[in-house]
Image (cartoon, rainbow, N blue to C red; front, top):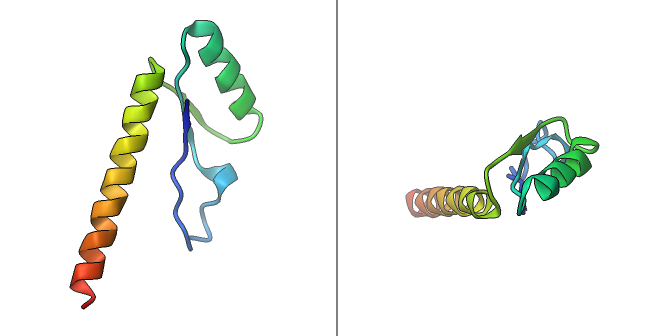
Length: 76
């Protein structure tokens, strides 16, 4: 499981510059995923499990959705 955070419209952040959260089902899978993404992005953040990586993804997506909804409400 790999997670990336997007920041649409921000010229300072692109897919290749965003740190990747990586969780694997065991040490071998985690090391393989970290090595794979380490060749593409400048920072790989290994976490303890795929469930942890998924929790990070969900938390970031919920945070982003709430912020977008708040901005949309304030923009009326």
